[in-house]
Amino acid sequence: MIEHKELAALPERFPLACQWEITCRCNLRCVMCYTDCFNRPDLIRNELSTSEILRIMDELAAAGCLDLVLTGGEPLARPDFFDIYERAKENGFLTTLFTNGTLITETVADRLAALPPHRIEISLHGLTEHTFEEITERRGSFQRCMRAIDLLVDRSLAVVLKTTAMTVNHDEILAIKRFANGLGSVQYRLGEDLRPTLDGSSAPQRLALSESARLRLMQDDPDLWAEACRQQSQDPKPCESGKRRFHIDAYGGLQLCSGNRQMSYDLRTGTFEEGFYHALPSFPCAWKIETPMSLARPRANHA
Image (tube, rainbow, N blue to C red; front, side, top):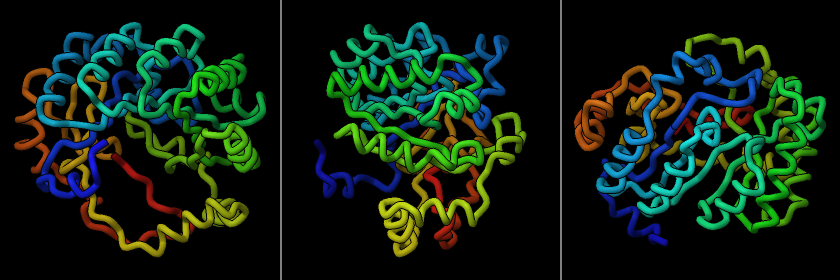
């Protein structure tokens, strides 16, 4: 493991961490999902091919990138997922998988255990079948997700359960956290704020908790409240998007972060080095101007 003091010695602009949205395809239709609008056959056909992903991934490794998050959509919905994942491991990335868990079978769990990721983050948005499937809009998804958690925990893989707080699940959030805490090594994280969809719709906002409801939720749990207070007490950190952190979308667009896609550099036609060192520095970012954090709404990490 690289020591923190060594990382601090890196140049100000260095491609340390990548969040890569390798697909927008997904087997679920979660009501708040910001990528599902691109979960269409015509757009899926335009996603990066296996060979394109592997070529770009090799360029990331050559540039010194260390931390790689594979996300979607649902990454496991790609038939070539393990070709991608195994190349990431071969390149030595500290690899994290974001998944809804419902495609994790015994075979998938065994393959992950054979080449363990840094962690696997599973979206668990309800602790009852009714709430979970009201959100995913897919029958049977709750039992498949819960089974996946068991499979991964049984194999001693590092698991994080995370929940997006919404009007449809706020009564179950603390129960989900208690469930995670009862699994021993499993961690829990209250997820980021709702986002507009990739086609610009603000529809997910209809599910947003009010400021007062979000505040009450955090005050009802000592850990959540302590974290909110900790963030409030700290000076805002400078935004590292485009400096040490960056995002790649399903079509090869290199961007500052997943929350800022105003401009992209096309990795299909250009090199990662050119995009990172020459294109990203010119991209506009409103979050470069930091504002004080609200105790009721701790700021999400957009990278």
